[in-house]
Image (cartoon, rainbow, N blue to C red; front, side):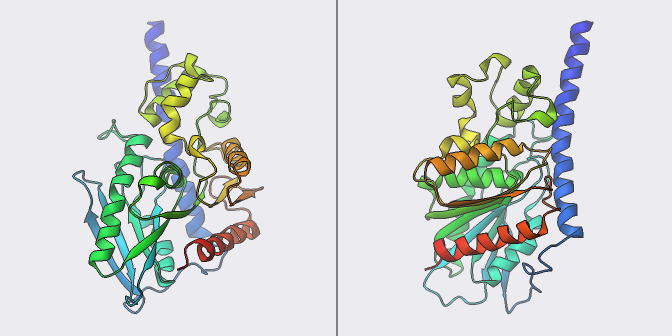
Amino acid sequence: MREEKKGNKRGMFIFLCILVFIISFGVGVVSKITHDPTNGKYKVEWNESIGTIYTDIAYGEKTSNKFDLYVPADNSKESYGLIVYFHAGGFTSGDKSDDKAILEYYCSKGYVTAGINYTLFGEQNLDSNIYTQSMEVKEAMPYVVNKAKELGYNVDRMAVAGGSAGGCLAMIYGYRDANESPVPVKMVFQAVGPSSFYPEDWKSYGLDKDYEAAANLFSVMTGQKITSDMFGTPEYDALVKDVSALYWVNENTVPTVMAYGKHDIFQPYEGSMRLDKALTNNNVDHKYFVMEHSGHGLQNDDKEYIEYMEAVQEYLDKYMSN
């Protein structure tokens, strides 16, 4: 009976951890809707003079294997840069349409842009995890590029971006899969995306003190069988490498702009410090913005958030121009 109760407690803990990811998505969305420190600078009144949106283009056989493509009205250029933005949602919720405003904005600036859906973890998709999601978006990339070319837009370079779970997937693609990309990946920009899975960093979940719970949660997130005695071993590093952008950082890693909230309780701020250190040690051109008064929604540091968005534009101008 005790073992059964203990198992129930563990199961409930994992459920609550996943629920927190869903709540974190809500926090991020609400903060964006109710508060815009840029006063609408990164929004446009979309119309046909700006471009055309093609929705729900299939890239695979699964229900969620679809993407939206935004192409600028001006189709006279010899080549175009592509910006792919992955949606937030704690790997369990969200949709490509959530990022419609930012995709419209960058399309209005002459980029081809795309939002990609991936199979979310949930009751109907218990086998879905960060690794399978990362492989789905990797599979989508040639379809995105080919569809753009089919419509008359020759894409020859790209940036990958996202927020929260989408930021995690953007880094994985930009760091792990750049060498296999159909066009060169020039940069990554992302906010509050987890880049590694060290139990000691995930203090807000109590995982720094409960390695068994950490092993259970990280097993669900990574799709690997992790046990509490693996932490701190090469075996563990090998198991989580494919979903840990941190482990792929080297001297050839693409330039990166990233922002994190110092009081983030949904994904560990400490992990971003590890990432910043790795990028610095490998001399990767990057900018690391820490929102000193904000959590996951980056809602309490207007000045720094504007600086983050300005840095994104600076890097786009530097690395995505013809």
